[in-house]
Amino acid sequence: MSPAASIAITAALVLYSIGVWGERLQGRLKPWHLGFFWAGLVCDTIGTGVMIDFVGGLTGDVHGVSGVIAIALMLVHAVWATVVLRRRDEAMILRFHRFSIFVWLVWLIPYFSPMFVAIAAK
Image 1: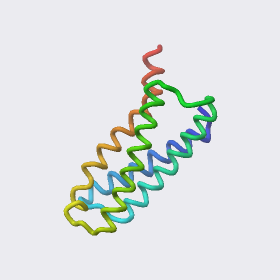
Image 2: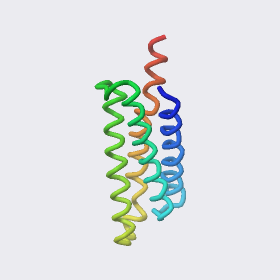
Image 3: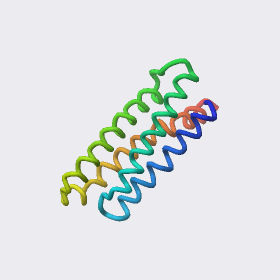
């Protein structure tokens, strides 16, 4: 993987994790969490684009498929969080972390899958 992709994807992990776990620990969705969701999505999208260019296309393996699913879920997550905050729906603001944790866990699959594949190959 290219160094630029590694940096962008790791930045996505850090930013998205701060947003998701900040929300979980505070018990309610806040605008600053939303900022971290969007920043993580942007970094992940950039890193994925660099990675796809580096390897010459999208792969159909677990990493490639789960990566596309993760980015799609991150986009849905960020858009939905934006809607929830704009509507000021207090019930959803307090429950939103359930979806956040799910999306974060799904996102970890493409992040760690290359490592598990490399370990299994040895």
